[in-house]
Image (cartoon, rainbow, N blue to C red):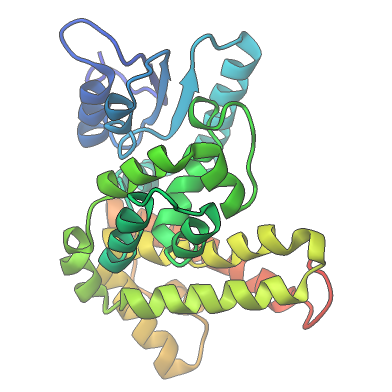
Length: 294
């Protein structure tokens, strides 16, 4: 059916005859990455559910009322309206995980295995890794994992998910080696990238109102997450744009705008990232040097 006509969204249960939801969504991810993929299930086996983490965009739990399902579907449709290019949908939808530092994964694994682990220590390590923060926030904001809550800080996300889920997620994310080739081709040094994100987050936390500090910190950690997507999907274009920006003194999104357009998936993603970078840089330029960010 998927091969016969286009679909925007696929909603799958976990327990199905012949093929379970994880296997089905993996097939959709591999063959039709532009389709939004959702899990709607009453499955309580966490090991089975975590198999869908790299290939599902949203997780809904049964019983699910009509309003919640409708809101999820409408939200997915709005995403498709933003990403009108099929090439962009395929490129972005094909991203399973973002690279995480092996040292961070190891620290978390060892810490969570301890009986006297403190949640604050887990948060302190998690917030140093952009890819991990992005995945935790995605899961924690889904009804299946988050229980209907909408955490807006890293601490809220870790607390909502619990140490068991966080620990299993660390194991499922995969090591940096899976992205090492792409990162080298993009000339992106992940430790330096992570450190820059952390410094930005710490600075933003200091200049906003106290009540917004944790939310601002999370936003600072994720402010350049699009570069990780580019590095994993179109590393050569990111490298060329970065070199051009440094040579010309222009901002990165301006350098991207000067890159020759190519046909197919890569061109669509570069054009989309140009727009995203432009919005980000404009917002950064407009931010006050002190006081609250509104």
